[in-house]
Image 1 (cartoon, rainbow, N blue to C red):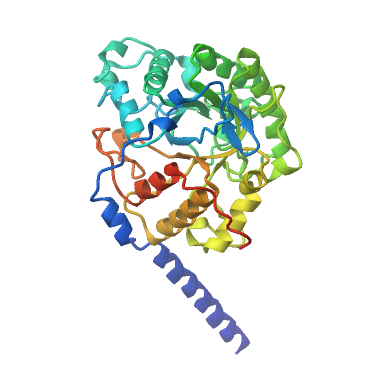
Image 2 (image 1 turned 45 degrees about the vertical axis):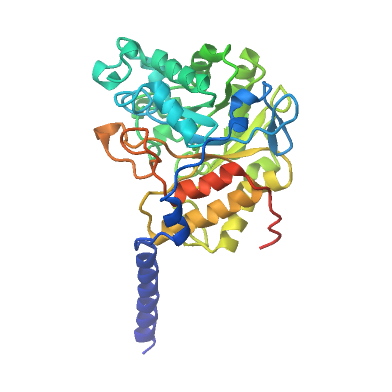
Length: 418
């Protein structure tokens, strides 16, 4: 009888879990506010938010990034990827001129772009095939680094600040379980890695990239490494912080004005180590931390993935992981990656609603992933895109509604203890 009851209870428990997971995966029906937003034109971008209206260079003051007059520059960013993937160049150059893509980004209201690259791109610096540059014929015949620079220049000419991001070692979609790309150096793994680099190689690649932008004041910073995690989340914070200091200080010797951005461990989610062991740079007021938050983040914890959490549970995780730095006025934290699909499930919508509610409440610096309507490999559709395949037409849905409100920044809210 006892065995029978145990089996019955276990069966009921697993049935409950199955039903809960199934509910998370059902399609979400847009709320009336999202439906109304989709019927209206996007408001014009605020000119005063453009980097062109700020007195450079930027620095940090408490939780904020500020210009030389102490005016806050809120990072309202979007990711433009591709140079970190197999084709070695930012996406869309076969569809629109880079200046048109820059204007599309600006018209969406963003004032800054996170532009990822792969170390393999720097190592090989290959000539790019002409068919990938159909809309940019002046770039035909150029190498990857020259095209990367041309895209940066197009962005900064459009009044958009640029943060360069070292995304991955091997040029491919990030980030899986491959130990060769789980950190900034992989030479200890020997022949296991097709693309191998030491810590010194990593820093030298940074210097190669950034020397091109020393004289471009709107290239405001370096996001040192994407989603450091180690093998199955085993990266110690102290090891990463020490490497980040070494790389950051080398870059600051090239130009002391750059912001040095240091992401959390555990795939960018965890900045708890910064409380007891903060990153210290040779130049004061240049450090910005970064966190990544996705629906699947939080897996393995007792309360589960963020897609299934209540708002109170979600806030507790954010405050524990990174928001204590913002709410305590300790240092800026840029939520440099988050995103959701155009057609979300209930779990996606729950995560998005909780995250955007919290980001608005603390008036957070942010970077949406991503602008691209297509992934480089196999030209697969990008469900997180904010524009149609023409790189011009905005997708006006629940995501742009919330980000438009976040960009406007109606003020910080005291949300108390939840």
